Image (cartoon, rainbow over all chains, first blue to last red; front, side, top):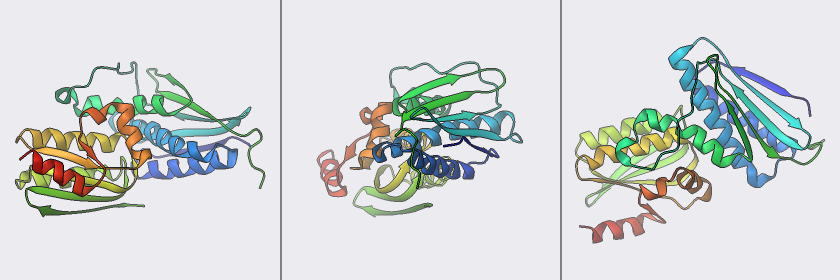
Length: 142
Length: 116
């Protein structure tokens, strides 16, 4: 299946659309039904994180999501243009430290817990999150 | 699906009924409701999530924020949830240790009654 690319403005309302598109293409690519909830949540987390980052740093710039069938795997890459140099480290849970800024780091933790394979590339020019799941080779043709 | 919110009081408990998707777009409405309830003196909240189709970390943040607010008044915020796809995100983030999670409203009410 060819690569599908989608760009959207950094608005929370568009995150749901991105989730729906990703889930539909995952299904078409041949990702097992039991994994589709994980795809939906992980893509939603990546897009939510990107939207929040853009709202702080560059609200006028679009967020890009690429979805592709890569040799029997369904691969999703979410790219933003907001500067990001570090990933929050895992820490023991304590309610007092669960501030809003700490909770914002939960998104990547959730993605790491959901996706079969995840790579996060932070940089001063933006963050790129690539994640993938197993899919039936050649996807569905119907 | 959008987010539907409702609430009612039973004894000392305020039961918050949530239906639909809790994400970066809809979570602010749940946050506003929880803040409003606490500001009006409702410090024991039970959030029924049995009709929630989707929950992300933004929604988790709102629930944690609500918990912090009620705890400041020696209150409680507990959840009703049996859906595996929703419970999974609580397990991944370790928040099963932070929230009381019950299988039904009746079970939560019974447990809450014992704590009185």
